[in-house]
Structures are given as structure tokens and as C-alpha cells.
Image 1 (tube, rainbow, N blue to C red):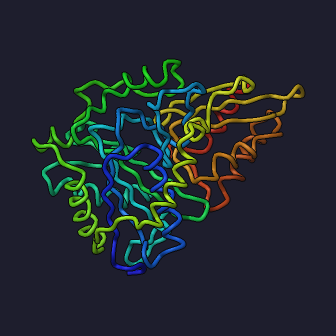
Image 2 (cartoon, helix red, strand yellow):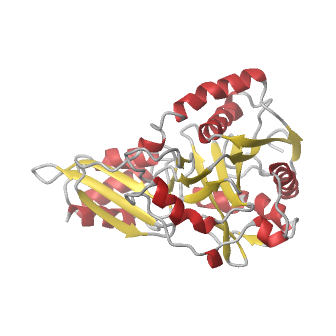
Image 3 (cartoon, rainbow, N blue to C red):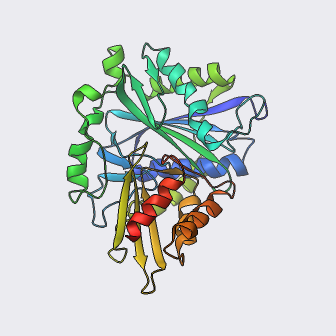
Length: 353
């Protein structure tokens, strides 16, 4: 294989949101700086409490949410999380790192390729889960979990799935009523008939350790890797604690919030949920500032680059289209979940009025 044949597996129950985020951030760095110990990593974890996990590019309310919101590294839609759910993250130094032979995956191929280990794991335990595309995992056409990914500017990749073990994904609207009474975070309505859980499908609830064993087998079968149990060392735990501080002051959750100065707005329904564009327009009509948000999957630098590219643009379709195309033509930037790039152009034009 192009990497070490080992796939380190970590089982981490009972984490706070900031501890979990810090562990992912540590691993995203470690697969580059310490490839001998961390050629890749598969992490199975639980987060305490009942909360809403929002995607990397969604807006969050500016006011405090009482700890009921966490922002993922990965993009996509909002999802119920915490007690009754388990998270699975696969961290790689580059997109095709675990493939034999190593392949140059396109962004739109990433989830379809790496979710297969999760599906095999669940199938082996009697859960007939499928990935129907977009950003969901289902069983019997009912929502079992959400899946997304992130890619850093260094090219490291994090695939992330949030799976219901005993929890009810249809509680999301109720959780949002508590965490976001102003309705900043958009979501679709779900009923108990629309969702399921691992416990409902197989009859018994699994522990995080059991889920980790399933995932280890699933990825071993799918990718030919040799799973090996691993835990963070004392020095690594200290580094994670330092990282956790940067996620624990609510600044990460509120990294993207509504802004009153961006008073030209439009939204478009998309494959994953919604795309929102908020603009400020200068007196002469050019775009002064921009915020692009919603249920989006993008490389870390893509959305900031698109926003920067729109600043100063004339309010003309050709100028907007050229700015968007210019950003998305630069590897490794990408934007998934909206369909053709013209969807973004159209939304900007509607926001301009």
C-alpha cells in the first residue's frame, strides 16, 4: 500500500464538543507531521449532552446558545447529535492515501469512496445501510445519519459521519428551538417515521467500543488495512488540551453569524439544503462585501476565496460569473452541494436585486 498498512483506531466516549474538535484538529496535523505513528486515523467518539451539530459553512446565531450548538470541521447540514449518537471520523494525509493503487480522487468522489467502510461495518451487524448520495446515510429509506468531509489547505482530509445509535434524528427541530430560537440555522422538518437508529434496526444498542470494532472490520474489508488500537500519549493529550481551548470560547461556533451591514440577501434551495448569499453594496453599485453560507461542502479556503473574489465586482452577471469561475478553477479549491456554479452566480444576482 502507499501508506503503512496500519490504520490506527481511537475510541473516545464522553467528550465535550471542544475536546472532540481538538482531537480531529490534532490528527489532521499529525498525519502530515508524524506519518510514522499516524499514517491515517479512524476515530469513534461520543459527545456528551443533547445538541445540534452544524456544518462548517452554516450561519450560527450571534447570541449564546447555552452550549447547545457545536460547529463541525466538515460542511453540510445541521444534525441532532450528542447522547444517543456516535461520531466516526476518518483522517487521511490526502484524498487517495488509503487506496491501492493510490488514486487522484475528485472532490465529488470522496464521500462515495470512503463511506463504504462505514456501510460494510453496519451491514455486517444486520443494518442494511446505504449511501444514497448527497450527505446522508439511510436504512430502509429512513435517515440513520449524515456524512460530510473537510479538506485543509495542506490537503489533509477528514471524512465525518454522525450516526444515531439510540437517538432520534427527528428531534433536530426541537433542539434548534432551544439552541437557535431566532431561526438562523435552517433545516428540513423530520418526523419519527422519517428516521431510524442502529438500535431500532438491529434490536440492541451498541457501545462506542462495539461501533469501533465494526468500523475497524468494515474498513479492513474495504481497504485492506490492518486496524490497530491506539490512544493518545501524554504529550499528545497535552497538545489536544491546548487546541481545545481555541474551540471552547464560543468564537468557533460564532465564526459565521448574520451581519446587519450585509443587507442584500438571497437564498436558493440546493441538493443539500440551502445556499445563502448576503452582500453589502457600495453607492456606485459594486459589491463591497459578501458572505456565502449554507449547507455547503468545500475545501477550507474556498468560501473565503469566493467572498474575496466578489468584493469589488461590478453588479453584472459576466463579472460575477468570471469571479466565481476564477476561484473554482484554482486547485485544490472546490464547492459541492449546490449543483452547477451558475447556482451561486444566480443567487448573487438575485441578492443584488
